[in-house]
Image: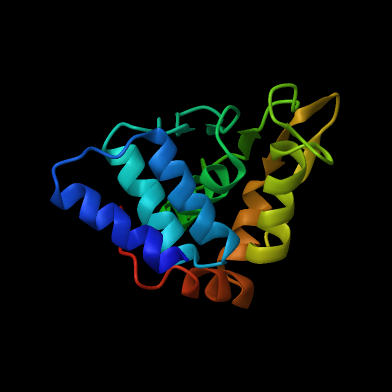
Length: 174
């Protein structure tokens, strides 16, 4: 199914049609659900580069803030994966001034699925189960969690990071 969807995107572009947010979201979701993360990330990056989907990953000199709310689960997980891979690949996490990362998923008021809020439950679960990265909830704000600098440094030097990176092996850093 994902091959057919990717072929249709290629054909669409070949005919001069511009993919929109619905097209990219459907493609990213199909690849994500099939656990073909390399293609899911490729299409998420393409959507951001085409300015069809906003990049919500903001690095500042203070606390890095990664705002994912209003994005789908699949886009959130792929853009967060991209940001984490880039962060580790560039070595920024090793800087003595590197601080914890604040991830904003929102409280789920606008993204409630059949089993409750989507992002606040599923994004940390993805990071823990697929990436092997430990996250910490922000007390008093269920729409946010933290990736501590210490947790990120431990993860970057672990085999879990290596296994996670392999999922995206065919993609070069942005």
